[in-house]
Image (cartoon, rainbow, N blue to C red; front, side, top):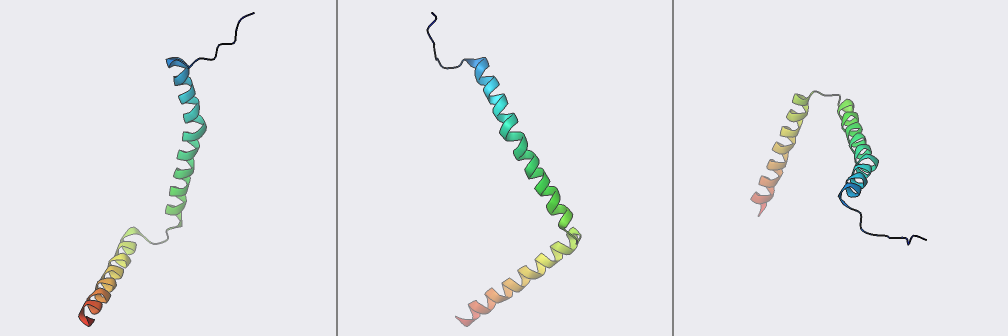
Length: 73
């Protein structure tokens, strides 16, 4: 009878294991992330310039609030 030898896998075996892990875990993660990115971009009704302008207005309002709080001290 041949004894069952359980050793540490060599270079080629590790490469195959890594390739299988990338296929099983990496590709689905990239696909889900890409799908979420496309979904979020499709949900945006406003053009980017309008969104940037609304963010600038919000920053201006927050700066005014901070200035008022600093003046109260």
